[in-house]
Image 1 (cartoon, rainbow, N blue to C red):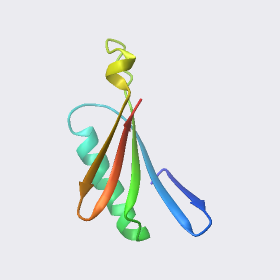
Image 2: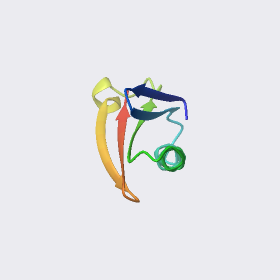
Image 3: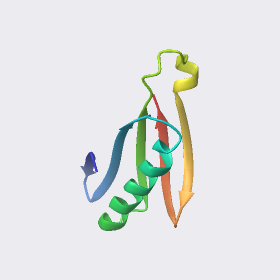
Amino acid sequence: MDICARYGSNQYPLEIIINYGEKTIPEGMQQLSDYMDKLGEPTGWLVVFDRDKSKTWQEKIFWKTKKQNNQTIHVVGC
């Protein structure tokens, strides 16, 4: 896990990755899910940086919320 922000008794696990293709998000979600299991946290954030200069900002920036194994993962593109 790249960052685990703590605020009071809450923990916010974040995984930060660079988009290298179709496997990036599924693999990042699995990695984050494993960290969330270890922390006992049901919610986490996967931040995906896309350095493809041929894409517009509208294509790179997104927010998707996905449910996986009783967990909520917010996937944020930038």
